[in-house]
Image 1 (cartoon, rainbow, N blue to C red):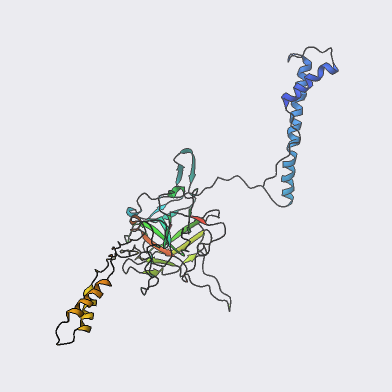
Image 2 (tube, rainbow, N blue to C red; image 1 turned 60 degrees about the horizontal axis):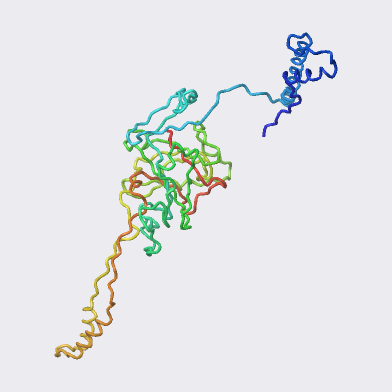
Length: 409
């Protein structure tokens, strides 16, 4: 905390004059004219002015002494410089925008305050893509929440008690929506951060993070096939610098082991509908979302959204009761081949088959759809998660996060 300057003398001109005038009857009772026109009062006012100046200089001694002591340590006061701030640019129509450059020295003004203006200190390439939602899932496939691997292995069909009471729902055993793109607004995320990995109300860990994008998927739009940087800002953490140099690979000494490749960043291939790892080199300064930083990679040309969504449970219609099957078996046992029908045996077999039938029909069960809101299904998702299925590490005190909605090329 800053050192507060002590107030060694708080006497001011008006107070000094008032105190001196009050003492006149004690020391000079014959002095009765206390108006400003009296020469004696004029002298008192002059000395009061000088007293105030001495007190001001006395109070300035600690600041001066501190500055001189810092100079002895080689510390000098920094020169005056302009105030700095971070500015986020939002695209009104990402799906219809082409990549463009924000030149340096561009003037930025707050809409509610026209007296404060800023200028950008560097040029920035903006790509036509914005983060519009993120969510987490229990299993590594978003469109089929029960699927466990690429082979097609799935979880057992959930029971009625395990299914969500309604669909769509933002939270269930298999899926939790962290941010829907509406509440809070993207512009309010720095002040109202949304949870990056929201805990599920069912207590099930969701290690797979999905980020949904709105983008212009034209080949010449300036996003697909372009090397971009995603700026991740965690709450109560230092914000990444947009102008920081790209980190080069480490220089390994003889016998030193190279770091493991980044395999936790994937995307949905729109041609095959499968999850594939992002190709090329990936620079991750967040340590798998453990702290604020940037993730730099080349956007695949096949980035897209899933085309089909699997229900949590298909509609089931119970088969009607069929006593004929049991009846045929019973008749085959009591009627030998080539013999006449024994009415007594037929009657007994029929009574046995009918008595063994359940008295009440099982009602049909409707299908339980995918819990994700259909409005969010058309966004192009990319996946971030651990290859072993464990949650990405999160730094203590950084349970909430905001994602910068501006991507830079």
